[in-house]
Image (cartoon, rainbow, N blue to C red):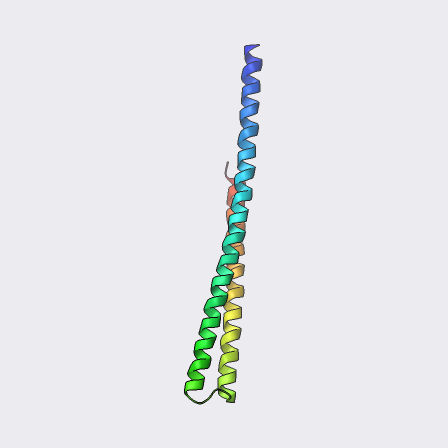
Length: 106
């Protein structure tokens, strides 16, 4: 009888630990998603600011509608897009490595 009570207690504890692990993994995934969204919004506002600054510089130089300024502005926009895509890829790689590490570790 005593062994049965100990076994029941151990099972109850292990199920609780498993549920807590599931909950923490879900919370971590939600936190990652929120952080990614916040980072994207931050980068978008930074990129917009940089683009506006470059446009203002071209306007001050009197080159607002020149071909060179349009090429420069387009290149800057493409660079920001490329950089943001690379960061997203790197973040996904880090998250996958973290998930794999968590799956392997006891």
